[in-house]
Structures are given as structure tokens and as C-alpha cells.
Image 1 (cartoon, rainbow, N blue to C red):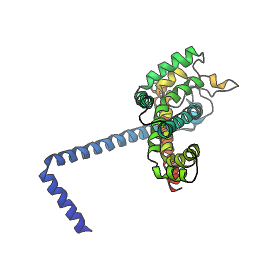
Image 2: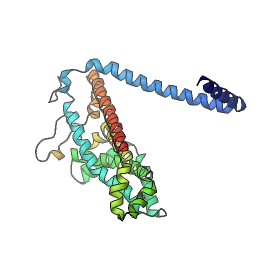
Image 3: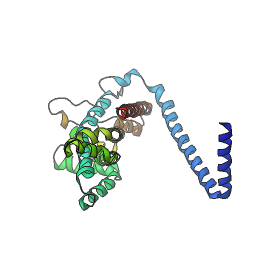
Image 4: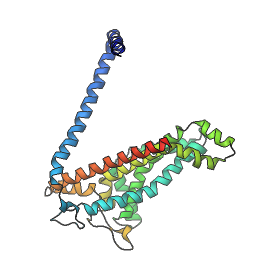
Length: 291
């Protein structure tokens, strides 16, 4: 084994001597990787050092006030907002991707326009989505700053992401799977829902998880559409109540300068939630891949 490693090392050394540019590029890649990992570890360590000592039971009380600065209402609102946004965006995004991959012709110009539009929408800043939601959902439709207006705005934000990741996942399904299903007498619709979609489910799930991460970390768009009320929506018309999600109080507390320690604690909770969601998605993807 040591002999093989030495031979491999000597071959790499000879190749670098023949082409010094390769060595330079290799060093640049290594330096960039080390810098990226170092910055990531610094950010995580800084947030943890500042936030963990400030995580106290008062932060998890049911009602928010200026004494406890509880994050529990915002946490519950985040769960509700995420659920409603996915309920709107996930079916539309997945079914749109199914149409683009399985039904539309490759030479169709309309398909090209849809893909280009989705890529453009993916690069638009969230503040622009917030202004659109303010003008359309809040003002034009008369919903006001509400849970519903925020959910629809976020669903538009994550729709291109879910659609594109689902499209790429469907493309990875081998054609023999489809041909075998057709050979056994299954129709197009049955093949798509019984063979193609289950095979592409790990990739589709990855897109949905990325969408959840963007919803949880979003603040700019929600300030303009959902508002900043630190209460859990109640009553029959709870969808039209103004709320704020977990990232909004973190921004508000830090900008006010009065509850900076609590904002760091909120950042830790937000970071833990995102990590847990990613671990859960990886676990589910592995289970689905085995099946």
C-alpha cells in the first residue's frame, strides 16, 4: 500500500514539474478551500460563543414581552409559514418540472422561456420579492400585512428553486426505467407517478429542503408582507393576522441595540434548526435511495 502511495506521489510530482501551471492551480484550490472552511468555522464559533450563554428559559415562554423577549411565537409562526408556503409552491414546482421533462418537446420554445424565467427569478434579491408582495398581495388584493401575504410571497421565491431541482432530478432517472414500464403496459401517467417520481424523490426532497432553508432564513421579504407582530395568529381569520418569523426578531433585536444578547441566542436556535433539517433530509434521502 505504501509503495502504491509513493508511486502515485512521484507521478503527481513529475506532472507538476512538466506543467507548473497545474501546481499553481492546485495551490489556489487548496488555499481557497482552507479559507472557506476557516471562515465557516469562524462564523459558527462566533455565533455559538456569543449565543449559547444567552439561551435561557425566558426565551421559550409562550408570550412575547419586553422582559423575556421570547422567541417562541416567532418559532411557531415560522413553522406555520413554512408549511403554507410549501403547500403552495411544492405541488406547482414539482408538477411543472414533470411537464417540462416528461411531456413537453425538447425543441419547444415555450419550455425554453420557462427555464430562462426560472433562472432569472432565482437570482432576484429577496427585497424585490418583498416589494412585489407589498404592492400586490398586501395592497392590491387587500390582504394587509398578514401570514397569507408572506406565505404567497415566499412561495413565489422558492418556486423556481423547487422546479429546477426537481427537473434535474427527473433527468437523472434512466430511460430504461420508463421503457420497462411502457413494456409492461403502463401508461404515461402511471409511469411518471409510480416509476419516475419515486426514483427521483431524493433529488426532489433536496430541492424542497433548500426551499425550507430559504424560508426559515428570510427576513427582508417578510418585513414588507407579513409584518413584525410578535404574536401567534388566532381566530377564524388567522391567515390575515400580522406575524413575524424567527429571522425577523433576530434582525429587529440586533438593530435596536437593546437585546443584542437575545439576538445571538436566536441565531443559535436558527442555526440548530437549519442543521437538523439538513440532517433529516440526508437521512430520508439515504432511506429512499436504499428503497
